[in-house]
Length: 484
Image 1 (cartoon, rainbow, N blue to C red):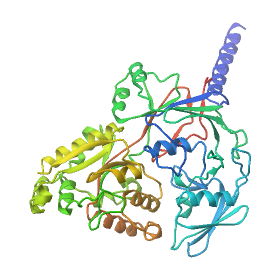
Image 2 (image 1 turned 180 degrees about the horizontal axis):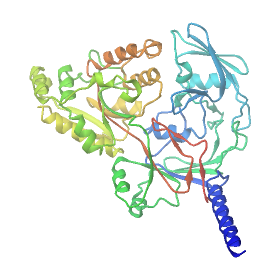
Image 3 (image 1 turned 45 degrees about the vertical axis):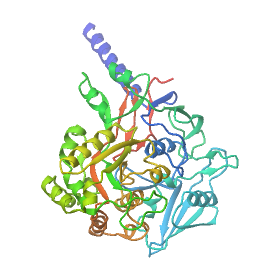
Image 4 (image 1 turned 180 degrees about the vertical axis):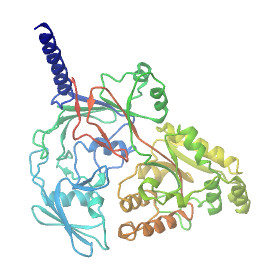
């Protein structure tokens, strides 16, 4: 009998251990997920100008929702709109709204959606034929209107008379200290069910110095990682839970002044000679920038869209050719050869600083005088308009996993396309999109430099955090074990 009892005891212990393991991995309601952000967000308004729009969109997604969303496979999914249809010409689209409520308790109506899209500057005619239907009419065909309306800037916002903003998302804003801290509480009436955490707290401007020294993230649930922090965690003993996106963020040098007449709203400044721009492009050692400065986490960039998304970026590959760069400089007008080329970069981005300095070094070896200057407002329209520089080094997230939507959005951000609603959004074949992108790049007003991923460091108690391919966070299933 004794061996029998021993076997029964052992089996019981094993079953208890399995049950405990399953319980620890089962999603739990409650607690607060505390997240450390590198950048400071000054406004949650998706339509506002912000020095760190990518960080703003990440935080605002807790509160405000778009009509549609795009999953990690690039497939469009319902969000506030539960269905949509288009006329055969793809100029007129109809979106049917689901039953949802804003955080102030009022229902989300088609009139609210039209008002929000109009405020966001949607370049289409929007109307509300009834309470639950929104019609969007474009002047030319838009093959991917649902993917366009998944962009964060088209999130649906109800603007109250007192200036406050109401959303319909899974969390409500409970406390707000601009640029420092935000506290969000779970929306009990959310149409898709209550989120697991009771609250999410965002702490902005975090340095992570203490956490990296201790190789320990607790008591925080997650932290946004910068490139210079990757190596510290990689060299630490034991496994660190770090999630990377695809190399999706584009580091691109864009010349502020187009050829010809000065751009409205910009300081009068002569455009940089096209031969000098081309010389700067071919002087860059993009492979070294990717391998050394980006610690092999990034990739050289030669197009606006990444190879992994389109399959054709390799056709734009620009090998470093200092001899050709010197020849182009020699062919430029004497004034263009001697005048320094000034570049502004984001003073809050350590990666942008490293790359800007390397751009100046590479260009100097080709006979160009490039000066890199930090600035705190390179990402805002007002800041860009006030800069007295020749070019700006921008870090732009990939806007969408739908190539035509991504290219149209990037073209608008870079000032490369006066009518983003026409040819790009009507491109039905990859070769059509390739030709459009090729024409955008042929005058070297935009010079792609590198691509790099976004990364997040998770604590061992954080579960079901999804890092999307382009860097966005999907926190729909997030839960935190043992959080308070």
